Image 1 (cartoon, rainbow, N blue to C red):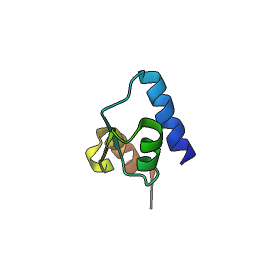
Image 2 (image 1 turned 120 degrees about the horizontal axis):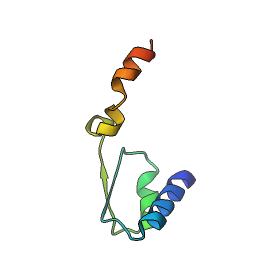
Image 3 (image 1 turned 180 degrees about the vertical axis):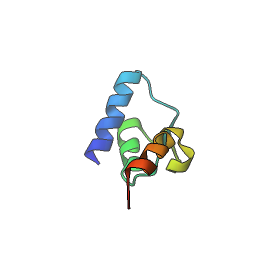
Image 4 (image 1 turned 180 degrees about the horizontal axis):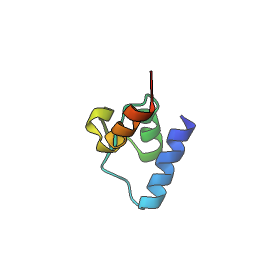
Length: 68
């Protein structure tokens, strides 16, 4: 929880303004951290990693290097 709050506080500081919407991967601590650091007016959208191109960018590398 502390790490999530610190992340959102730092992001707010760097951006200089509150976002209208925050998109996360659904970690359980995010909703509370967003409410406490950014306020309840900020919309929280959850997307799984399959819809996130950044999460998928190393997929081929993972398949080649991780052997189960």
